Amino acid sequence: MEGLEISIVHKSEAFEPFFNARFDPEFFQKYYKEIFNKILLKDHEFLGEIAFVTDGEHGNATTDKIGYSKYYGARNVLSGILSDNNVEYISEQQHNKLRKSALTPRDVLISCVGANIGYAAIVPDDIGIANIVRNVALIRSNNGEYINEYLHAYLCSSYGKNLYIRMNTGNAQPLVSLDYIKTIPVFKTSIVFQTTIRKITDLSLDALKESKHIYVSADTLLLDTLGMASFLPSTNAVNIKSFKDSFTTTGRLDAEYYQPKYEQMVSQITAQTHARLIKLVSIQKSIEPGSDAYSDDEDGLPFLRVADYSKHGITKPQKCLNTAFVAENRDVLDDLKPKKNTILFSKDGSVGEAYCLREDANFITSGAVLHLVVRDTQAVLPEYLALALNSILVKMQAERDAGGSIILHWRVGEIENVVVPLVGMPTQEKIAAMVQGSFTLKAKSERLLEVAKRAVEIAIEQNEDAAFAYLKEHGA
Image (tube, rainbow, N blue to C red; front, top):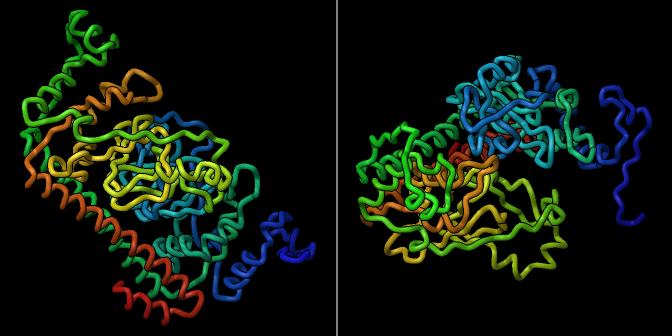
């Protein structure tokens, strides 16, 4: 028995009606019991007593890349603030059927199904029309003594998150039901402290909003420099081509490929200084190890897929490679870890999404993510190139090349021939500086959320005075 952790639980405790007769050993781990009892010994209320709790559509909503209402899933709640990364859309009719789970500013969302249960995000003020899928729960305070921003920080804290994860049913597919969510005890603090947490959250959301604004300004500067800010592609769907000028040249027979708008875009770019992408970068491929190598164990090597990043940054990868696979393939995997200034570029799914790494990475990317390494930084700056690849100038080329299939796939040969506009180095440097400023603000937003979370933990472990002292020390 040496080295084993044992919890002795009375039958009356295991079959306590409050917990709906839990008897799985994970639920009664000492760590979870200690956290639970610690909160119970303090002033507290249960989440179902102080908040409206619901989840999203239980059926199969039809989604699209555009539509009336944004439709957020678990991958959108991993970074603390609701993200638009690869968000899908549903129709107005479907949204109206799901009014109960329609989002409002400052709602709290938390993943309740799958490997990433327990990740919480707050809804920004500019959310617009939006809804959630089944694997996300919505929590909205309906008690004047609790503020949503505080509930968010509490659920992100080690206490709230572990109390939430404890409620996992332990099935093959992790699940925390709404009934269990409602039984999570919430540490009660003063309104003064909660208001302070709200102010920190305000600053975090403001920083993220400004970060996105600066990025858009950098994109606008590129288009202005190229004289394409007011470019309106043709809406004409008819284009007459000879066999010689179509299939013989391109190998494509699908009519959508030859829409006039694509020719117009390429003509606008090639009328100015430009280069084929393969002349600017070397293109490296990663691996696709197969699902047998996947692991939900956070000790594994993070495995980044297309859904795990966007032009605005990287979220926590939803999969890892298991330790056995990593040990067997260590040399190969170490060589595949992308380095600083590598541009991650997606060729499958959400094709053409580019992100420039700001430091060496300790993860492996899937085969759907190419690594672009700039050949000559005197000719093109990596951060400029990443922005150009994310612009409408390249997005339309991706749309042209990868269209015509249910699951989008952009062939490497087509990617090599992407036409990239090149502006003067002073403008490239200005755009790169704007992009760097954008990501500095994003990092500030993330830091503020961490400060708020830690302040809640200190209030639980010590008291509010100690938490306020921590906030003052960290300039919050």
